[in-house]
Length: 104
Image 1: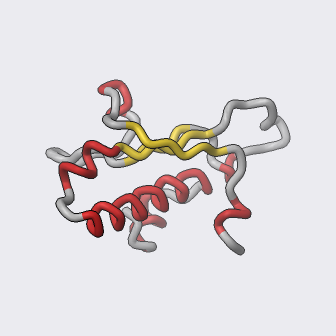
Image 2: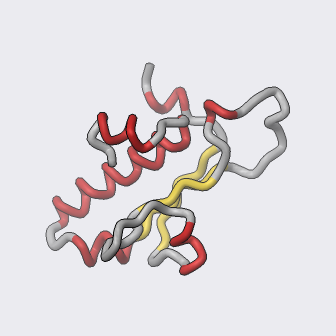
């Protein structure tokens, strides 16, 4: 099944930098920067009461990616991994599942 058919009520946006308050929501290791963030209710946890809600939000942070990678190719690859990682959160995958898929 194509991933596109599994997406429901989700927006993907790009921001320059993460806000300090958002750093607590993302998973960071010491010395690392937040490349992306998923905010919402995963598709796997939605029930019949899920209606009339604002879209889930996947945010990709441009600044941290540009600081971490030097070439356009490296940045493109990291953006791809970041978006796939956050989409996996949208679908309900946990960190262990994403690690097995190479998305951690």
